[in-house]
Length: 112
Length: 112
Image 1 (cartoon, helix red, strand yellow):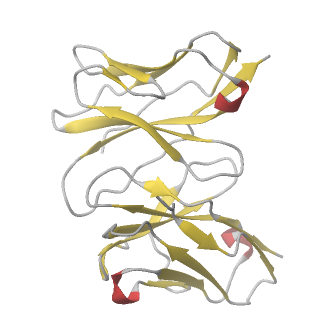
Image 2 (spheres, chains in turn red, blue):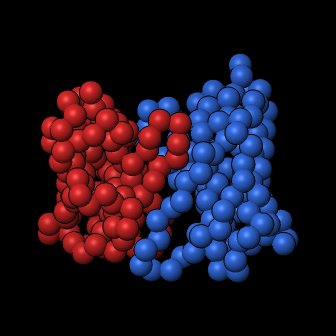
């Protein structure tokens, strides 16, 4: 079974630029999550989708972050404009429903 | 979701059992104990979970005390590839918002 796919794996941008990350969950998984992991900390949830609807986006900084999951499969997370403190690893995870979450390898973002 | 307390770091000799403790004294009756690990530069990986009975799978064993206020993850024969940060998480199994609250975990180093 293929795992959660994410791209790109690494991204370096200047502050105030825009960036987008892509996630393809495990086939058939209805729930998709985006987490942010700052160096030295555990992952923190940004947003959770159930199919193509948002379940929880309470921790998403909506003034600069946006996410969508069109057609209930792939998802994109965008940051516009980026700040220095957005430097982190962005992890995507999926699960069948309210069950075990399976994580992708993450996208490492560096904002200069 | 209940909070967990884990030691920040532990060492274990290769081939020996690694016993990772976790305190979760405020766990409620319908909350499960989950363990994930994160190997350097990878996404978190699910290990095991349980409610009140001890659990075992091909990766590890989970021992939960009778009062459910603490648990221990056991890796029976640690290898160098088990070097990682191990996260103990408690959460309910309800549908809807069911994100994982990661703390800082225990950094396990397996020594040759």
